[in-house]
Length: 112
Image 1 (cartoon, helix red, strand yellow):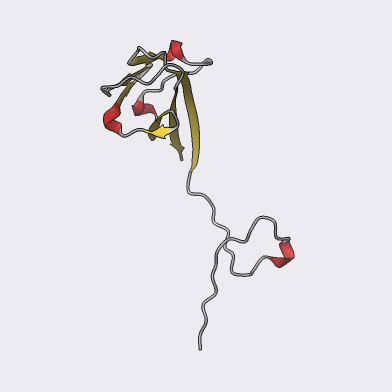
Image 2: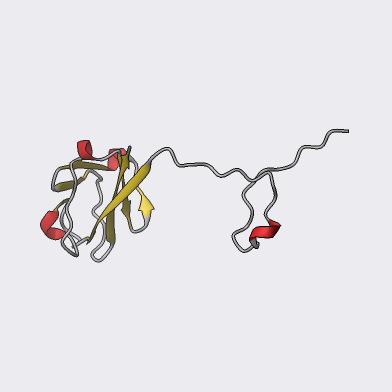
């Protein structure tokens, strides 16, 4: 009877001499760079700009990055809820986030 061994990566706490022979090291195909923009809702605005960021951050042009995510109060938003342009985030929802709710833009750029 032929048995197949699982070739999953070993847990990081195993010493080197315990790592199974079937573990394959894979070279990554690309590297990524992540950038973020963080602000808090004031309870009134729908448009946020670079100046509204918590620290010196910028809202990247979507054409400069591979993809982006928007989180409001920690919840990933569907693309119909926002519009991002260079230096500007527009919330397209009927409701405005309550005052103090965190708004996070995550930008990911895949580097070759």
